[in-house]
Image (cartoon, rainbow, N blue to C red; front, top):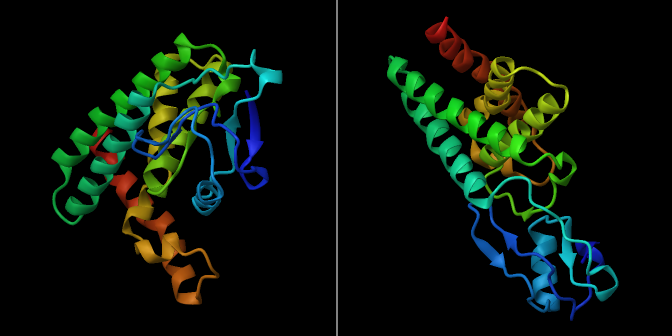
Amino acid sequence: MRLSITESLIPGAKLGKSIYNERGNILLAEGLTLTQNMINRLVFLNIPFVYIQDSRTDDIIPVPTIAGGLRRDAIQTIESTFLDLKKNMKLDGSFTIEKSNLKFTQIVQNIMEELNRNKELLTLLADVYTYDDYIFTHSFNVTLYTLAIGIELNINKENLEVLGLGAILHDVGKILVPVDALRKTGKLTEEEFEKIKKHAEYGFHLIKMYTLFHS
């Protein structure tokens, strides 16, 4: 199979690998013959590339680095935990923070185990996903790439876990930014831009509470 830019696809091409949504559910299955409507939909969903069956490259088989189940479970955990933090941030959130730490640490450990089991770190882009819930999928992807680089640099396990937690939490402040502003595709108004810039401040306060609890 070969990698093809989505915008250059032509009707009649057959998918070489399934396309998933951010939950890990199949949107278009491997072997499906693409129509123009399907191609238009892929472009609309901002999927930059897909794998296409090609007899000239049958011997090329991309290997997924992260199992679909792990990716799906991790993103769902990040989403539910972030939303829990948002809900309880104005209260005494010590219990929420404690639960968050346990969940995030488990995610980091699971990713580390998967990456250590698969040394082909350059295949990180082997699976094709859509990303509707930007904050949660982005946090997972940043954690994945961060840990992959950390393992490649031979960073020890303890420091890798700290690095992974930082990667998960790096954009946590965006849960307090209005969704309309985050998902807007056109130019932001000055007011919207100011709201988005606040995410760093929001994240600082959330992580400060997180850090104080574990200091």
